[in-house]
Image (cartoon, rainbow over all chains, first blue to last red; front, top):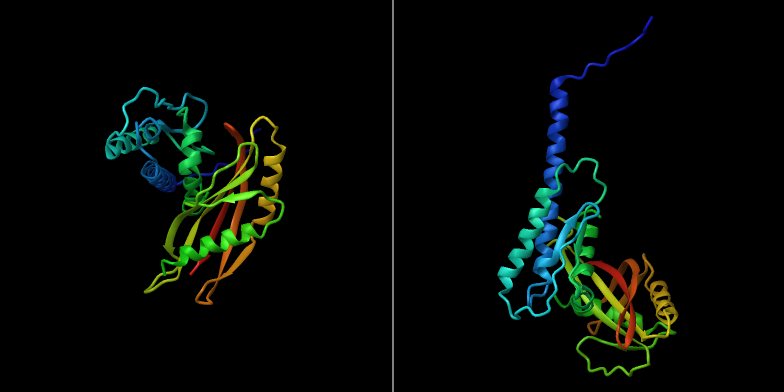
Length: 136
Length: 140
């Protein structure tokens, strides 16, 4: 003989839970967008290699990393920052379902990243902002 | 008042100058010629945010940012010297430390330290440097 008990989940309750998950995911994507916007706006632009080398990653994978070598200097700052932002926004779109994700990493794999960081402290500033504003 | 930034910088730099066991300090926009083979610290004052801390008219503001200190030591001599400087700095600016500073108008401010952490050592010939980031905030 089998004993069993069944808990019935109200369909509307289930729908509400899904809705809450969706709202939370949207809020996270908005925050990631804000961080992306801030990051490109405080990044220096010369050849554009640095600002277009940011990526969001959730695991292993090849991050963007462009060299500034032999690239023309004095590039259009707004256009390069826009390209950098588009890269990051595209990464956010590709993240898929955020449920169960424990971390999302902002990376820059340009070969001269340390040189830029020493002079402009981009990651230091982003980290400071993320710590408070984005609840890190 | 916007001059709060001058006072915050002064508070942090004064506190640094009172720390013993550290080499010469290269301050921002002050001529400093490092001597190859001789350690030095390079400081950067990085304001990050100024936001109302409360609702309503004329709210108190929360200011926050980072005081970065790069401990430069001679390249090729191992990491110990830079590590030692980083340890001294982290201890001097330990989280929850409050730094008081009285400006020329005899107004005293208190800058609070949120965190102090170091990064990995990096070679930038002829130096090897370790970055120490000190997160600060103040309500004013």
